[in-house]
Amino acid sequence: MFAAIRSALAEGSLIPYLGSGVLGLVGADCPVPATPETLVAQLTSKVSVPHKIRNNLTGTAQFIENFKHRKSVVALMQGAFTVEMEPTALHQWLAAQSNIPLIVHAWYDDLPQRALASRSDWGMVQGVSQAEHFGQWTHHFRRDGTRTADLHGVANDSPVTTSDESATWPTLLYQPFGSVAPAANFLVSDSDFVEVLTEIDIQTPIPEAVKSIRGGRHFLYLGCRFATQLERGFAHQITKRSSDRHWAVLPETPTRNELRFLEQHGIERIDMPLADFVAVLTEAKQAVAA
Image 1: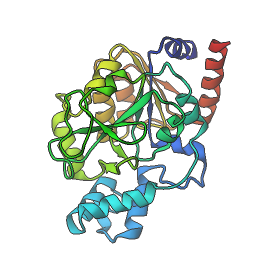
Image 2: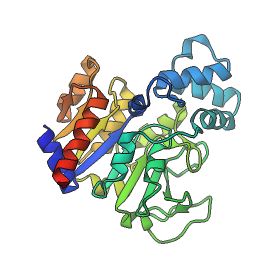
Image 3: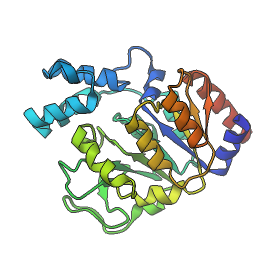
């Protein structure tokens, strides 16, 4: 298994897929929400919501959007994730690998951007809410946070360049749920995800650059669970038409649905703590370099 991962890294055919669980590497005192459960708890500590949805992140966000305003959702999300903190060793190590063409980051923090900040050869594409950017699925950003046109030149609500810079970035950071930086784009409410899931089967919300890069490549899931339909749906659609072999670090006991998902998608489970896996992964890459 590690030989195959090591080979994929050396060939530039490995795509890391980071979930919220990566923040577990920070420790128990992580200053930003590290799970959907801790995020919804933070939101409900600021706004009173019905008891039956207090543990449901997307439902809570939808309630706040309906009865407060979309701006309230954005402000609460910014408050939760606008925190000065250092990237983890994993973020820093991934940023140092020039032969990783795509990093998928399925959470709202900006630690990957912070880790990549010292490089000049990358950019990012983020999912955006239809409630704020109707008719647009993603926005592309340069490393300095300024917007640039996507492959279709779509940029209706802010000044951007007309050239397609994203096709020339050696490393693309894809954040399907948005991110606190650089523009506080968040897919978090029920309606946000309904809009995307309505179109995702035909791949409309998936950036063209991501579709191009993923072909024939292997995904490595780190800090991810596949326990909910939303988690499985996004993982499936983002990895569609890639290779038939992937890996997932999953030390928790998988649910029946997770086991079925792993089997269906050729994902080999790595049953070890993420911190231990990261230590082995970085050593493996260093051995290749030597």
